[in-house]
Length: 294
Image (cartoon, rainbow, N blue to C red; front, side, top):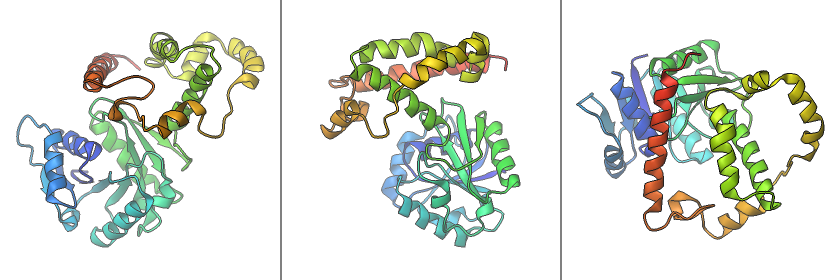
């Protein structure tokens, strides 16, 4: 695959376009308005002219080998876009959604030729986090999966395959299981949010940056993990609704870095500094991981 189409001019769409263009792919990014394209241009930073094409004409993407959608996270909007794309592109063009939570099957309901449709979930910031989740729909062809997997590898990413279209795919199911237990610990007064974060950064996260949970369990001893699970599993949080800790913040309009306050205070320029520090940490971590042997 050499010709890439990107639909969406937000942070994710623009970042994806930049990554493909830097790798030498013929890349076009589509936005509905000139204003949206100008917004994307402010996000994209290419060291030299790589031939990245900006367009408000969806038909300009018709010759793409793959088109990746990264528009607003609304089911109807995504379905309408893929319905239009199905009428524009040829039958060999792969269509992919970057949805982080919507059902891939539902997003692709109006796609003509669902065997060439799948989820391709990138992670923010996409230029630093190597993971890409490839999610099958109920009809995705094996050849389609192999091509997208190979494309991800070719641009230096670490792809994984989610075999079934389940809510949250793989990463978000793990992420929210962890967050649920962390909030339960804080709500019960067992520890502060600050100390829970320290446990993750300097303990669990230190391990998980290098090894996955199954590898960690093998190193720790499955006999030990089995016996701990005998008494611990029954005491873990099993909340099926949003917990009070996050619900109160949500209702008060505290959404985290983007609003200036979440579990922590990001007002007075703290938010911009937090993003800067985060990106520096991720850059350092990526450099280390690039040198690790699997």
